[in-house]
Amino acid sequence: MTIEYKITIRFDGLDAEEHEIDLFTLGESLQGIARVAGTVGNLVATQEYSRYFRSHELKVLAKESRANCFSIDVVFEFIRQQQMLSGAFPAALTGLIAWLLHRATKKDTSAPDLSSQLLETLKELAGQNAAQTNRLLGIMERMVVDLRPSLRQAFAPVGVSCRTLTIIAPQRSDTYDETDKAALLLPLSDEITDLQDWVVLITELDLERGTCKARITTEPEDRRINAIITDPLLKQLNSPYTLAMAAGEPLPVRAKAHLQDGNIKRLYISDVGI
Image (cartoon, rainbow, N blue to C red):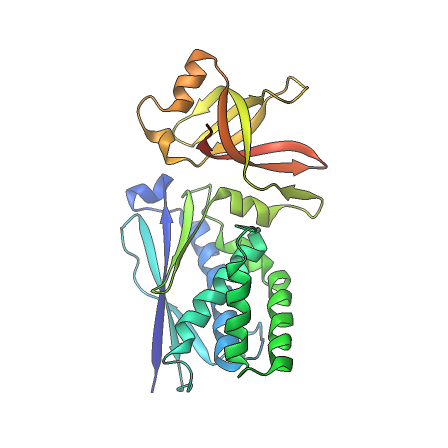
């Protein structure tokens, strides 16, 4: 008897708005998603960590794409029935994938609920056995490092052919953007800050790509830095961004900064400040 469970991978923005996506980056993304989803799914089903698909007790399949922006269903098919799959598997799978992605991208680091949910999930998988739970915790931390190349692959279309990648399941939905991708691509000497208040003077703005050049008014050096605006408000007529640039006036924004050796290299602007 086979058992199926489905999650949806959705791409939004840029080419995906026209129900299209760059084929090369899509292929790379699907390989990364298959590796991550298959490895996590096998861990949930067997409590064993294996990076080799041939040893997994499930298949990771893709169904036809849908043009609501650009979406693909990823289906998990089990060759033989596992006792716990009917109830616990869906929540455990999506919870562990969400934790893995948040941990690797440093997304929402101020939200402790994911860590507590991870612990509860692993306790359930371990049958409330403390030693087994600690073993699974160690495996999850190891997977953050081991699966980093696959996670980078999964984000390949983001910033190239789409703006965001969303993982949709009955239990939850998580959206990741160019800021999250940047955190995955950073060398160890670099970092992405938490969301902060900034005041910027925009000197160039590309409405189609959502990119701009700006000066940070609090910085002593009179230099321009690159910035990416993920705020949907940018697409509106006479947005605060276009008005501020046209008037040559500073604009308060909420953004994360990419720091390289302590210096600001790029801003990821998500909202207009107060």
